[in-house]
Length: 553
Image (cartoon, rainbow, N blue to C red; front, side, top):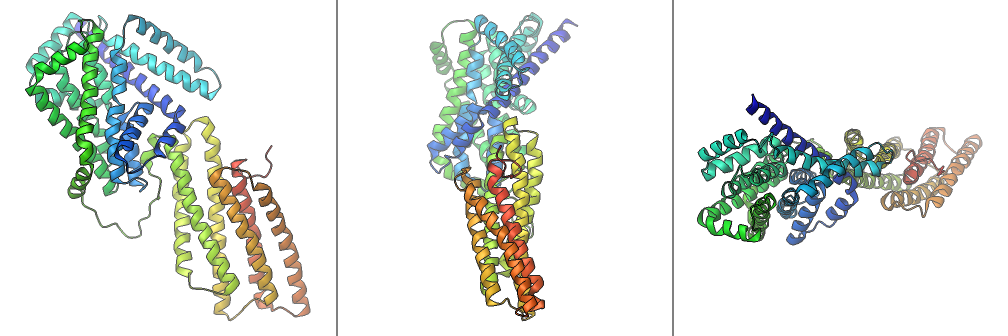
């Protein structure tokens, strides 16, 4: 019974540790969203830069698994190439070592500070301000990590002689390196966190249950086990995303194989070096040796394999060949559901997708306006193709935003609200562009045409709307209000033009200077242009008001 109680106590400590890790990771990711955006905005083909970005992002969110899944999502969305993704994956392994160093630094005074921090974090959670709540979540998460570690190392858990005897007996049987590596792989795969697995191993070494020479192999296995999350995330993704997961796995397997050989051949000199770095028999010194090895492993593996990035990419392409894409299967260009693990990055990608959609809408408007002015009907297929993509993007991105809305912090909820409205406005403008083109097609089929006066009036109105498109897109892209007053003035002009042109049209009809056959087409064109102007004002003012209202109060 006492042994069972100790095992339950031990599992409770592991559970509290993992909960603390999740709290801290969530708080860091939400509060450091802008930092991650800046880092990801610097993605280039420079390998060292990629390693730095991977290490930086992982240090921010404290999860190499989350970084890997995010990279898979970006590759699957076509935002990142394999050559860019591979160094980032390597850097992620370096970034995750920070947790191990933090765990190894614990002592009695540090523990007391962390307990107080955890309590302060809980109290901060009752404050209404979102930033204070996030800081509280971070503090409570960091504190809970050490609460969990100390529960594990207490007399009721690893400190219990019965538990110590049991584990020492287990490790006396499975002291073979490959078995120890397998233990690390399985344990990490089960708890889905190499940081948590490393923390448990460091604690076991600090309490004397596990010797350093055996712990090294379990740490190596933990680095392979963390690949399971990325491998699972790649299921259902495109070939490139699957290749990222394979490269991540291959990187850790090769690194583990190399270091297994190093440890086996130079075990005594390596251990002596770690002991000389952190002399003494106190728990902190014992723990820092494991943590130092974890850092050395990841940094060394990255330095060794970084020159072979292109070879790793080529190998992944051979193992996972390209598949012929099914026809008529559409997907978003910059967004992937795997990005939901990192909401701040997902929101950044949504903006890119909307910019792409805006470009298609702008192109269709330009083609339809050209058709209205000149009668040119050469671009019907292009207009139809763009409109199909616009409609798909509207539906798929709306669904993605619904999923994302429950994950972002409060300050981003307003942004998502405005995006819903902008998507609707863009889709409606796309519909109008298609209608304009269809009006010209139908009139051409019936051998009808506007009078020179009517064509000139519509052309003038098209020019004003074209200017409004430039202003609204610039405002949406740059979030600057510089030309919003001009946008409002142009919208008022289109309202007045609609009234004036409608009145003059009916006057021409009454005088017999205009055919009744073209009347419906003229009215539809003028009305449609005025409605496009309304939607463009909504988009421009979405940076001020989520619903696009011109009331900025």
